[in-house]
Image 1 (spheres, rainbow over the protein chains, first blue to last red):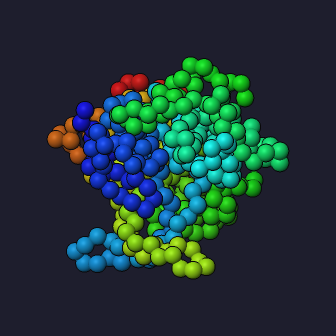
Image 2: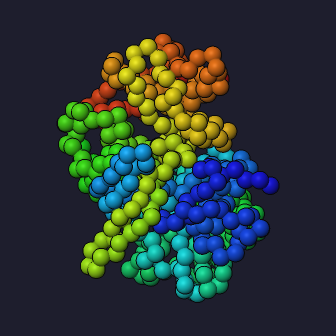
Image 3: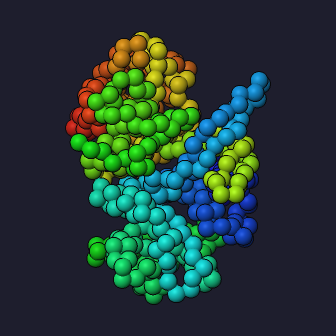
Length: 203
Length: 203
């Protein structure tokens, strides 16, 4: 199907890049996790399944030039730390909020990949009744999972005992995102699975 | 009360500036509409009433320097048009999404203040079951209102007839945000009023 992207033909595929979207039949080839999520979000938006966007990278702008007859040019700026997660939106009436992380580890997801402000934010989201989760990719296994933020909290709050979430726990408590052609990473299918199992009620 | 801001002591108060937050007792003095909304969102976050953030301004980064022993410096970048509204989050289980506009007109709100992509986005949000609205300030009157996005759509879809929303309609269909000390602009109180009246069901 033809997909209309939110920003016209282009959409941001990373904090540094801004490229033409690849044709869908190449979607899976060589896309980063973030590109796959952006692709999925554009697909979900175009098919009215959900309205989910990656937030822009927060930038502190120090100096801008305004050349005559051309666009304002930022000539000095710095990256700022985000105060939230990278992705949020609405899916069938539910506020959803998540972050995506990749690890080269095979047998566990190191908590050092997560920032404290992300955990604090996700806890507040869940207190408000939202759905908070993490998308975790084990790159060496080429496997990507969704876990509820509540599982992250369990381990985050016990870091003196261990500083990572075991792969086996993620397999058992989470849901694998099975790659497909379009979108390449249908993570909302995994969310539907977790919602039907209501696993997050256990926490 | 002491407020913990999401980013520590600072938070963004506009696409160009990044300043210390003013003490609450000065909060109302000389704040822009955006600053008042950021202040309200920080207050709502600190008091666990809602989790609502302004999205960072989307920037297309072209070149970054990485000086030894200091922060990465962006030396060429450009502003990009957002594909969504500026504000979203969760309020008591509801996904909320809005934009804020100011007009110097006294008797109507010109639709040219609104971009088509913002209307398209708000329509999709409402299809998904979210609460979409606009915060509109009549600066000459020092009056600020909340209107449901559905009222905006009514006029937006009839632009060949008139290109603005009359002030009287906004007063009648919307809800005024009555300024207070803390937060300066308690817009969620106006949303509570509109929700209790369920006016948006009329559209």
